[in-house]
Image (cartoon, rainbow, N blue to C red; front, side):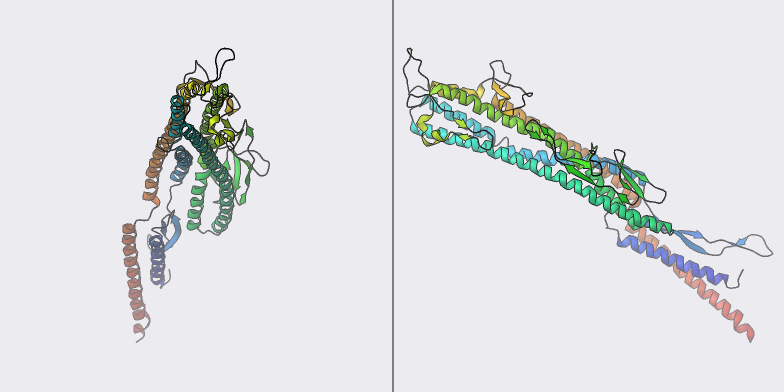
Length: 484
């Protein structure tokens, strides 16, 4: 062993403690960095040297074997899996809450209140069929009914359009994240091959995986070269440093409904299989829940307008003529009160039509208006298998519901679905919060712990420096003073 081995050991100690202090400083600097995993300088003794003419071996110093990243991969996998479910329920709750805001039930501005006011106008007309002011009020309330129906339908379509845009945007976001992950794989493999530990790059990769897990469910495989492969239902999205793109194609038609855009693999147009994440939540909410609420609302509106038109055309107006259709329009966008009736409220058929040879026209008769007012409580039946939503709700003496109850049931189902999605989202958030707390206890930076280690490394550095001073004095005596 060299005479100066002690000086070399002290030098290695200085370097090791300095590197440890540098790692500690890096931890403290990133204490508030989202997704950062604390690091540790793992110290190991260097190879000992044989002790000549004696037993045992003399140590040769210390070295930093690795800058280790403290992370629990099993917890990361658990968190990503639960985050997929959370994202699905949060997405559903977000959009169902928007649908609740569209209907605004129960409230004074809700559709139910508008419908009741309209029925009350017919009730009032049955008592005062010759009153021009009552007829004018009825026409205005009819306009309010159609305006409310059109406005509600337009807002629901706006929610649907937003969901369609989100599906396309989230699909493109998958491509962006996959490209970034493939790039990080390339850097990590290169650095690992050089026997480096790219801890910060691994953190960035985990953060990207976290974002991807919110969009769609996937499985990961850690390769021997430290790259990661990502599979969606068994098909590779990222394989080492190669990423595969996905895109969307137009949704198919289902009756009058156009299904949401279908995410597919760009290489062969095969659909992405997904049951969790934001994409699955968007598609299911749009094409199941939202479709049901929109079609039920349309069925209710068309059931009222069709039934009212049948009664109105069978009645007699103020001039003794058969009534016209009270409502016109071929779709919800064009639904309105008949322009003829708007211009002349005398065309409202409040009276029953005269029967030739049996009765004479009686403009003051309000019995037809009373029949229309009774639509409020008339029994109806719903045929959900009817492809045309305008024909699903019809008057039926044996029916088990009414138009008003059918609308209230639709709103009640919406409320139940919204509360359920909120509850499940809260449960998932609590579970993920617990998992993240466990992960933070492992990977998170504790300033108290880092300060304690900083003092420890500082004192060790000072001791190593003092050792160098001691050896310097020894060598000075050995080399310089013994020559005198």
